[in-house]
Amino acid sequence: MNHRTDITSPADVRLLIERFYGKARPDPIIGHFFTGLDWDHHIPLITSFWEMVLFGTEGYTGDPMTAHVKLHRHMPMQPTDFQHWVRLFTSTVDELFAGAKAEEAKQRATSIAAVMAYKVRVN
Image 1 (tube, helix red, strand yellow):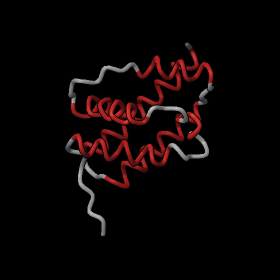
Image 2 (cartoon, helix red, strand yellow):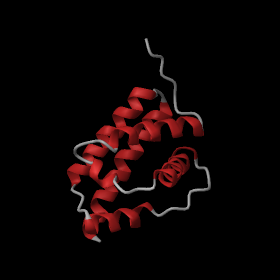
Image 3 (tube, one colour):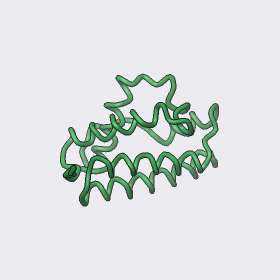
């Protein structure tokens, strides 16, 4: 039996992000959005973003909305792409963790994806 614990540390966030992108990159529905990314830069950046979201830590300096709007201009993203991203993210959280922070991560991912799905299409 796999006993899952909650997300409690930066190491947990890093594990989640690495595992998620390990699934997202080869994914037949959304994988093409991640080709050409500098993963040595992207993984720490996204990890920092999620540490800020979940723990209120400082240090994240990116602008995810602008990045997604730019991506959408040359590689259009549909609401279904964001929905698939949420399913994949949620299943990755559930595979690794259980607890209040894990639930918060899934709720935040759902909210962030909904806002992004809207904003990329109106900008």
